[in-house]
Image 1: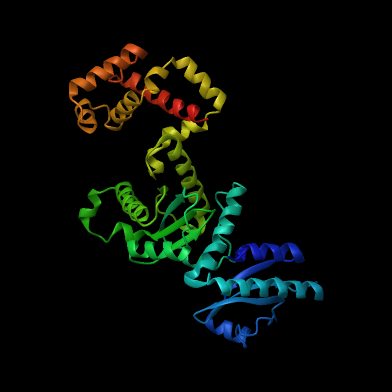
Image 2: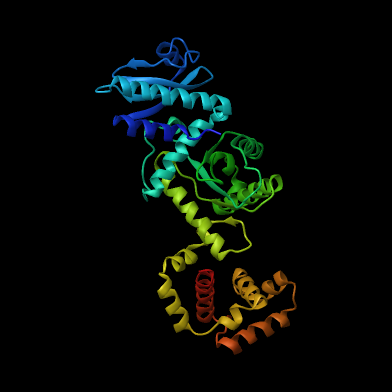
Length: 367
């Protein structure tokens, strides 16, 4: 495996020389004129317009190269740059990572991780990112997170092949942290054309359905637990960092509050987001002030009954159908909850308190 991606290489060269650096994919004509010998001469460094250029790899006649500001660069630093770039290029060629744009994707992924670690959620993608030119249109972001611990690692190529079979058109796959991938799909691929009948389905419904199909496909291909989150369409060049931050938070909330579910939608987790933002000490205080609901919330049958009741908008008949129980059995359980807690969940006020208590209990118990 390559020990670093191209963005990491760029940062190391910047630290090594103290000069500005960048990575750029050149057009065919520019590639041919700048590197007349191509990539056969791996030790070829070119000085052009005050920059030292070194080729990394070639794809369809286009050379991706790293550049370093030349002014004040010592001969030793030039040799070190050459050595680092040559080793990277050789390792890259051996792994075949340049296939299907993986190097460019990893470059963008490394930049995204760095920005998010610094809590920069509104940064525009810089010009040195090779993929920037493809990120100006409306795209829908999905975040896929795997919990596979010991299974063989899913490769970029195998996941990209699977995604293309599902979306049937151009998509982008950006590796982020280990076992975490960002998927960008063109908005028009999911929203269809101008068919008026499609307007009956909301955008949220379409995104949820697409996520369900995608998750089912991935789960059928690899053994293990996968979480998937989706967000509304964005123009990635400006909105990507904020969207990835939202998707990461959504998966964290989903793991806490939606145990047993693997598709998480940010617009369904507003109350959960609010509860999770409350400091732990304050959450425990609130639980104490609301009253003791532990006997009900620690009972799996009662907890499932309440969760289903709220999911069905407090409709008794629909809840009974969903639970495959008689209506009277459900009424008996709701009466039992009232006897033990004093809360009648058929009343809006009490239902809101019980719902809040359930969320507080989940996040506090988890800690």
